[in-house]
Amino acid sequence: MALKDGTRVPRLVKVGGLVGLVCVVATGCSPDQVLRFGWPTGVTSDADAMRQLWTWSVIAALAVGVLVWGLIFWTVTFHRKKSDELPRQFQYNNPLEIIYTVIPFVMVVVLFYFTATTQQEVQAEEEPDVAVDVISFQWNWEFRYPGYTTPNGEAVSTVGTTDWTPLLVLPTDSNVEYRLSSNDVIHSFFVPKFHFKRDTFPHPDKNNQDNVFQNTIDREGSFVGRCAELCGTYHSMMNFEVRALSPDKFERFMDLRTRVNPSTGQPYTTAEALTEMDCGELCDPNSVTTIPFDPDRQSSTPQTQGGQTVGAGD
Image 1 (cartoon, rainbow, N blue to C red):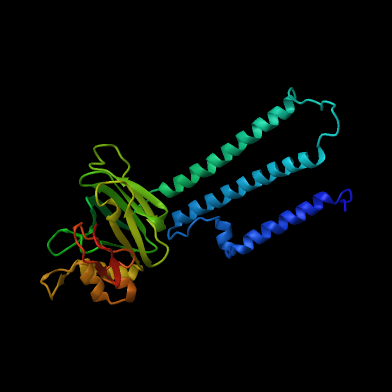
Image 2 (spheres, helix red, strand yellow):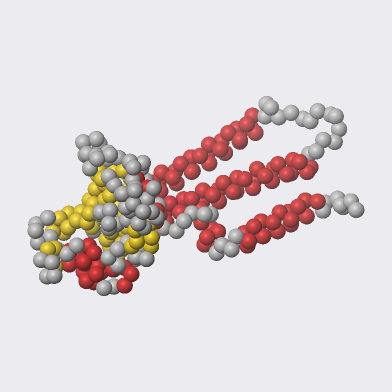
C-alpha cells in the first residue's frame, strides 16, 4: 500500500527518534554518563574542566551533524530528479558562498577560544600548598617533599624498588605542585585519573623545559600511575600509586615521616607511617592498584602482593 502524501517525513522522523532512544537506553548508561560521551571520570578539578570542554565539543559536533544530515535528507526527499531539465545553478551565488565560508570560520574560532581557555585553566600555577619533586629513573620513581625534613636533615622521600611499588601520598582539597625530572632517559608522569601527563626530562632547567604543573585532588582514594614514554626494557612495569588522603590524615602521615621510628631507630618510611596510622585501605602499606615486578626474566616463581599475582617470567 502506497504512503499518502505528507506522511513519509514524519514517519522517518519518528523511526529515527525511536532508533536513537533505543540506542541510548540499550547502553545502560546513567544520564551523567551519557552527557560525558565516553569521557572517563577524573579526580581533579582540571579533569572536570577538560570533561566540560569535551562534552560541549561533542554537542556542537552533533548539532552540526544533525543540520548536515537534515539538509541531506531534505534534499534527497524533496529534490529528487523529476525531469531531464537542468536545475537552476548556484555556482556564482556570492551570498551563499560567504555564508558557508563564514560559518565554519566562526565555528573554528569558538572552538579554539574554549580550547585555549581550558588549557590555560589546566596549566595555571599559583602558590602551592604542597610541593613534590617527582624523579624518574630506569625503571622506578622517587618522590621528595622539599617542605618536610627528616631527623637526619634530609627531605622526606619515597623510592620505589622491584619489591615495593612507590606510593605518592598527597592531600586532597589542596593545591599540589609537581616538579618533574629524570635521572637518565625521558620518562612520562601519567596518572590516568588526573587526565594529565607530562614527560620527565634530564636537566629540565638547562633545556628550557616546562617541568611543573599543579592540580587539586577532589577525593580520597588510590590511583594508579604509570610511565607513558617508552624508556627501556621494563617500561611497561614502571608503575606507582597516588594515595590521596584528607588533609588531616596527610598531616599525620608527614608528622610520622619527620620522626624516628622507635622500633627501627630510623626515620619512618612511607609503609611504616601508613601502618602506624591504621586508617583502613587508605593506609595499606602496599599499593592496591598495581604490583611490583620481578626483573629476573628467567624466574618461574609468581610474585604476589596484596593477594594479586604477577605471572611467571619469560
